[in-house]
Image 1 (cartoon, rainbow, N blue to C red):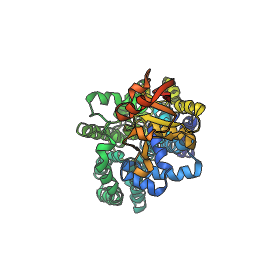
Image 2: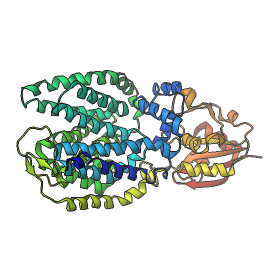
Image 3: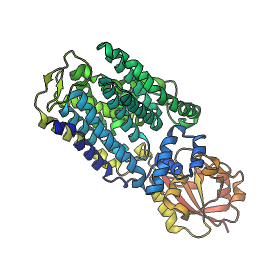
Image 4: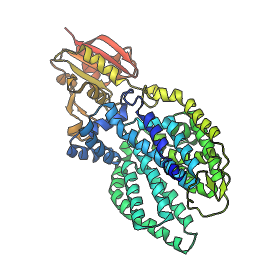
Length: 501
């Protein structure tokens, strides 16, 4: 049975990988993924210039994706595959962490529960760094437990590398270090040798924090521009968080209920996973009351730890008896404080299956669109197909709005490539600006001179798309062009304008 216990990570890893790969390229890239594509397809020098303007915190991920795209292309599947692999790794490590803390049965069930969550599939199929953050967060937890059990410089070095990788993928995920600090201080109470653990932990953190400090400073300087769309945190946001990270209100509620039960049953052994859920949520929420930080997907890295707690409940782990916090050698039955868990594997598996069934509608929905919120989905692909089907030589395109986060221009560029019409009003594109946005000409009438047909693409469903374009740009279009055909797609309207006379 010991051989099986060591392989407890395999079923969750394979299940998560299968779920993550299923339909991975079906949903078109949404606006955040378009930002990833725009950054990753730039030369390294231009990419570094971009991070000096915006998205410094995501710069290391963009650099990784630059190399990936060079090797595997920029299809939706290729862009999302690193996230699918990372999420599968996170599932396997979730099982390992739960096994070390709570036993083999808890490890298996924790990993499988994590695998069936709609949120796991959602962020396994997103070309953003959240899956990588989840992987490195749980890896740091596993390596911390290993270093606390048998301290060595090699183990602390591995932990340091995991923390550095965590910060490079998602700075807010470093809030788990508050949980690690409490666990380390708690562990030092158990014997004279354990009193040196805080020193080893601090020394392990120093190189990681030294590496991350420039990134932290750059991200702080860009905060007001980067997060200008985020609202201050409200108390109701805490109640909505489980549904946000699980991508299902019902499944998120089930996960919270199981995690709370597992924490109560596991006692001291729930300290690490419990604090890795609780402290990041509270710290980000408290900060979000003052500065714009509270976005549910920024806390996806806490889900593996909630799954570990849920695994304790599903395994039937009894209430812990007093004992050291270090994991005891795993056995075929879950143990806490020497008390064997009751046999109830079929019932526990039934709960995991139930969670999967409850999440099926959300699983289907996330493979149709990645837009957030779903009611604000923009059909970039549909708009691009309309333009491609009717385009003629000499056509131009005009888009509105250009200053927000919808990235209509990036959506057309992704789906049409070099075949897209000339963006008539652009005088400095994203690459020249080292930005995600362009600069449009100050005199639209002059920039549109000689153009006979314009594809006007505006956000939202508009009966009169010309009326939606304000300022000089709208005046120039209304003065010199008339609306021919109009097509409406989810979140976007396309109109073909022809020159008067």
